[in-house]
Length: 113
Length: 133
Image (cartoon, rainbow over all chains, first blue to last red; front, top):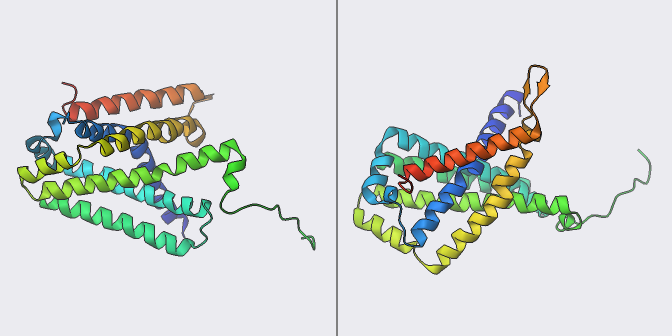
């Protein structure tokens, strides 16, 4: 891989890691609030729909989900290696494919909202 | 190269168990599964939202309200904070040392800045979601 491409790939990975380290506790917290029945007002249909139909909201959601997926996929690939799986090519294809599908679905659903 | 190089016997599958640092590394790295899980939970929520039906959204929220989900989220939140977020902040001064002129910014200040930024972002998300006014 050329140095220039490597920088882009690594940059996206680091961005995804930073986003998931900073934001995911809050996101898990929101899901926890939903689970205990204390649905936050911002997650009621009208508010969340307004947020996700706004271009800034769409952009934020797409950025957070796609970068986090890419980051998680790359780390999962290394985790497989660490647990003794020595089929890197197959693992890489599988995890990146799942991340790509997740990214495309995110784009598709956001486009439909 | 010597004719009989010494190869340290090491297991491919359990090598990290012998050392506390390696164990912590593995505990941190497996949090990528949580990131993936919550990404796809979010994708599912977007799929429901894209149907444009308030009833379906209500149904989705109700489907998330059970004891199993409460347990999953509570354990995930604590595990994630300890092994991903706070571990990430601890590594930050090593990954991104900051130098201002001649002076190197201390590790403590970099870590503290991360905690402050995290608290601010969390408060922002809580405000966006209407949890805090």
